Length: 373
Image 1 (cartoon, rainbow, N blue to C red):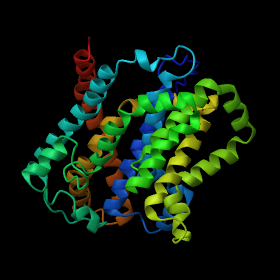
Image 2 (image 1 turned 180 degrees about the horizontal axis):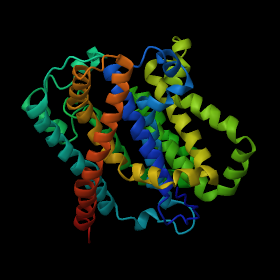
Image 3 (image 1 turned 180 degrees about the vertical axis):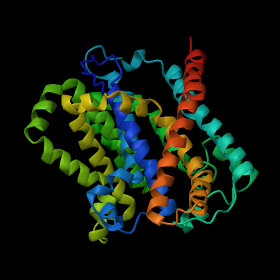
């Protein structure tokens, strides 16, 4: 086992955060698999309405993605060696973000359409597929809808790559992160003013608070790092526990108090929970060392491709594999569920590795090339 101790200046990538992103992407895969085939009845209640839900809390993982993006995209604007906004090449940043996010997505979008044409069919499985699963890849809408979805401008109802709505949020809001960092550099609390205005006029959080929390954490990490480490180390486990409770709020707290928090406000709790968890991670060398393990670093490296690819594997491969296991004599629903999960994970990891190597990396390089002066 290889574990790497880190000691990095702010000008270098904090690779252990890639591992966090990889684990979050993995939880999204588990979430969609469980939504498709359910959980084994013996553990369903324990794994759903408790903090143990974290391992398949794709809802909260989206919050973590956004807070993490706010952090890593804004860290360059704080601390020693910071980039002044007046010197920041916004054109280069925008082009790089677009090709980083859109081009790999477009490849998966087209691939998903081709997979649907070639392999989509109905399978009888034990465990049975959910109604939610049967609604997937049934109606791709009009040609205009397909065009809008391919361009990441469709507002909801993504049919080919259902998780793509998060990429639209990521792409649009991330373009405002440099401005958010500038606002936060004047006064940390000011970063939340845009969110308040959006909430007042549009009645919609638009996930701005998640990016704002990431920017706030970046400022604290860069400018008051020792203060952050000292205060979190005094009560690390209780603080982390609160973060995990908030992160899993949708299932570990909200079901027990259904009238306490409106559903569209749960995102605030998962966002704050993500902030607390990340604050604990950036303040603790031991956790960073664990996250720098080669296996987790690999998972972090392919995290975006994994996030893009997993849905097509679940829809096109998982039911066929489980049906094959059933026909081969495996009629125990729990065993078939487990084998299906392992096979789905293996195929997704293989596909993600290929996409990361041959699509994602060249897309990043193309964006950098096009962004040259």
